[in-house]
Image (tube, rainbow, N blue to C red; front, side, top):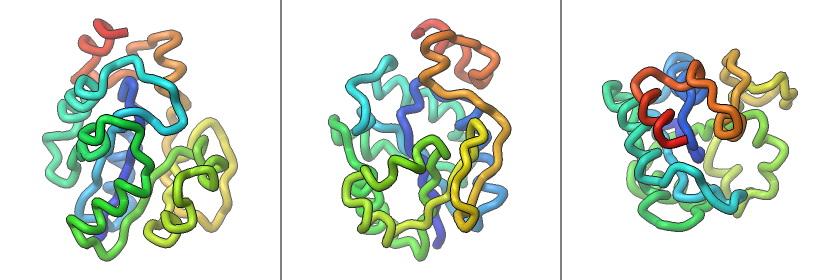
Length: 175
């Protein structure tokens, strides 16, 4: 079984996140994509929307598709959880043949700073979701999306047109 993992703060989830997941389903040969919201991103000091609310929003967005599973592993840890721990958990529990780890192009340069990066590199194949015309190595697998938005930008200046319809009212209420 081949799996893909797409983690993030999703604070808030936006159409870019949704497009990445849907495009990954089309372009990667996977049986399932795990969407993994963080309790707290290891590179951040806090969050705006609480973890359980972000988890609820992701369920609203993706639960209708049986190839997408919202994995609450990192939220259950109640701490900043390095990606390597999530990958080890998925390997042990699901025993996949291959794991694709989907990251935004904006995170590519920071990868060597990730906890246990060398081990992580040996366990996954990185897939880069394009963003803001950031250039990444040609040899890496990519997911092309045409939405240049980040959750951080949305928190500063909430443009509801970037929020999926299923959660738009709740996101507006909470930001």
